[in-house]
Image 1: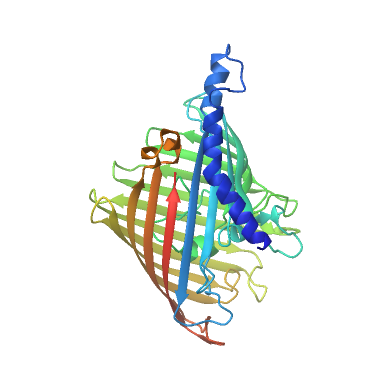
Image 2 (image 1 turned 90 degrees about the horizontal axis):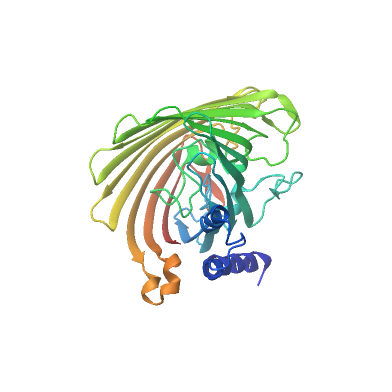
Length: 397
């Protein structure tokens, strides 16, 4: 068994066993019993897990067996453990609260893509492996106004309609879109400040080392922000931006990213979403000129029953200059994802397993990708399209 298999097996074991260990320790908290505040804080620590496995089949039969311009589902006709996630956290919500979040991931899909510069990604070769810590940060809600939340450490990006995915949220489609994969970063390391401007508006400001970088990329600092608005009980709009030098050892060339996302719940069963992005970067194109990338994606999901749903995504992503995909091209994609969700009640077997109660998700996927260039491998050659099918199984608690 190789190193990757040992890592995946080990983290999967931790994923299943750690909650039981922590539950067994609840009767003996680290804080003295005479200190009710500390005792209460320790009991506020939560553990959660997420496990995803998949298999993707490409009708182009590419050689080598890799799906072009895919983010996590890049292996073709090769069943994989996408990710095994284990989260330990103490959430914060009220003024004066301290908390933290530690997110551990292993697998043959997600970690080697999300790994940051200087942490699980070699700063010289750019190679990553099958373990990642996408989040490790401390939180504090300062007693300022309505409560100013401060997160310091490494955290997932505020950009994007789609997410990396885990126990606290995963996408309606199995595969990720081009905007998520090539338009925005995955994580940041620095300081993030969140403040509720009103009951419907929240603002975020952050200062970081750079996109997907734990160590400093250069001598500069990247800053960003977000304004999130609940425009009604069923609609929301989010405005995101990011600006700073993102090229290693170069603090002069600047990158700017602007994004608007929205969601609408038309009925109790039917919802819509949109993601629109525009970005540019100085002298980042393959020919040395300024690079521009932009995209728009639309999403819909209909819940036929409490268990069965059907999701659709249509998107266009233009990479002018080839700085994101390696080729100056416009990509289009259409994705259909049927999903069936079953509750998991391990507590029926034994009450001690209550913390492992969660959900089991089964879903398939049909996806058509198109380009205005022959960018997709077909056998040993190239063509302008690829069609894939996939099956994905998820367990989360």
